[in-house]
Image (tube, rainbow, N blue to C red; front, top):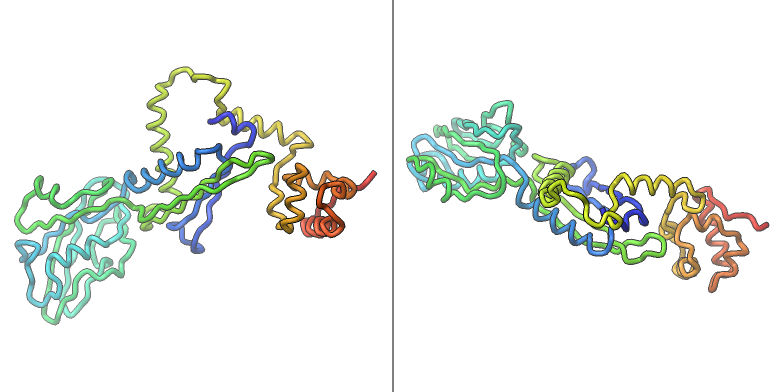
Length: 327
């Protein structure tokens, strides 16, 4: 870890669910970070999230009585190709990586959905209401679908070269459970350091993995690859590196000091711009520093008048805080 973290403290990770109770769409924020690290971490995590997470998908379908994907069956509104495209949209959660065959069959009039696919206890269908095929009166259909767990994207043409079987229709397979990743780097401030960064990353999954699990997997995967370059050798330039233990100890020691008990940015008080600028220009950047000031001290700040003093007192009172009494 960068030695600067000993000064600004460990980065804090927070998360916010975009919709209450929806763990598949979460916005994470990480900070404070040294300059440039927001883009470094965000770009690496985004690439891994989109390309390297394991997931399950339907890889092929075999319909009884159909010899190729352009076959149409009597009483079945969709062609085999349409059925394959619908199966491609089925969202699955699979606990083991071994391939599995599931079946879908029915008689009309009926609309067969993803929930009608007969799967083992190892597989969960996350969108059971998805329509797969519509059957007219007197029509029937029976098909077998292959369900696999993998990583990334595999085109049907590649599968067809390996398993070219009559009647077996291969499907372009997207295993990734991550649907969208977006990140941005925002400015952050700790004390007098105004050049720090905060990484905000939004993750949307299909539900087979939670956004938190997806981010955790990505960070663990990146860590393993980065550790490969260290090769368990002695740390270079030790005095310019800080590990978690040292940073934690530094934070603990800082917490014990009265002058640096904690650091809560003064911006969260939502003071007026004039009052806030006056305090920051005077070197008061945290609530902890503010409550140690006396009214006389604040009155000596440039641009800090009676109205600003009253505003500060009222704002602190809402948090059950007060200024230090004049001696």
